[in-house]
Length: 453
Image (cartoon, rainbow, N blue to C red; front, side, top):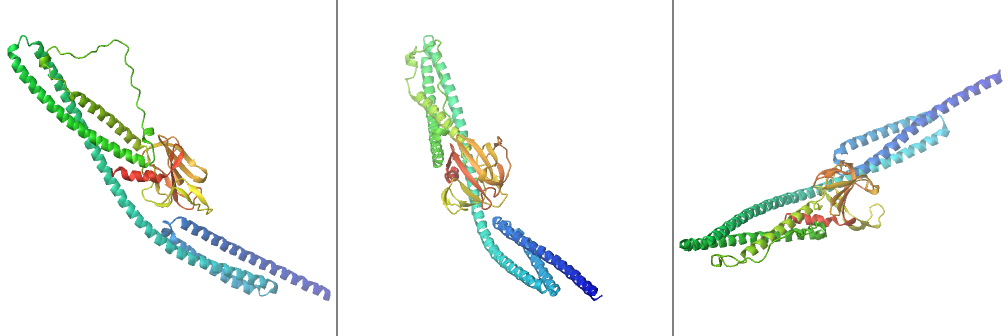
């Protein structure tokens, strides 16, 4: 009976001890899961801080929600502390488990201290971000003023071109009128010459009329020469200014302009020629170089206008403007310190920073040749503008065009992002001339001078 009683007591104690052990283990597993959840929340908080540093403009909008989330984490940690105190009360029955609970409590206290330090550092970073935002707003104001100035200059250039075209039309109309009068004068002179013998009496009247017509033709030729000279001077000045602007980009204008077609071959059929010998020499005015001079000036003006029109066509295909309306230049063209490795590296474009999802615009009209993921560029768009000119736009958040699509100047092609090998939201902008990277700043500076000329 005693042995049976001892065995019953031992079995009961072992059952109680086992039950208590499994209950304590379950409680510890629950506390461990809660600690893991706190660790995961802590890691999520660090990830959110990294995203906040990338999204400079978005941090002010999300600040209140992040603070609420932090207060929720603090409340959760306070609940964990209360649970730990309750666990300590329950684990006083087992001396072996008390040490493990104390170690767990110490680890939780250290994590809480690290979390509080992280919160304090985040508040400091928020202050620095607000100061940076104020600086960016100042830059935005200056860029907006510069944009208004460029728009005014562009409007002035358009008015000037319209005025020049109007003057050219007037000059051409006057030229046609002068030529018609010259033809009429020649007809009158021939009529007078044929009828001279029959109408000798009217010879003096005809000579007076011829002299009057010669005087009118001379006046018209003088006026026409003055107009043609003014148009030639203005056209030459415009050509020089436009050529100067294109030369600032480093491009060779002669290689960009279309080649003139070869002169047509002379017809092999029969023809007529020889010097002009008037039938009645005394009624024909002496030979003059005025007509030849006018014809030469007209041909020269036509050549210059054709070249000016060709240059304007080339200008429409040159990327002279930035792909963003407002941006901060984070990295220029040339040798720089790599943002990932810290080593010296070559940078073949411009890094233009702006808020994420800002529209990215085509800097000139052309055809999309690349639209998709491109290795370290991330989401990239490449546009062929003709004449060996191409532009690239890397690290986009979203692409709005397709390969083979025709795009116009300043047409949105995507949204600014941070895809690929990037440390933050920006667009990597490149200009390639015959496949070779060229400093885009040359084109941007030339673009600023387009309307100043």
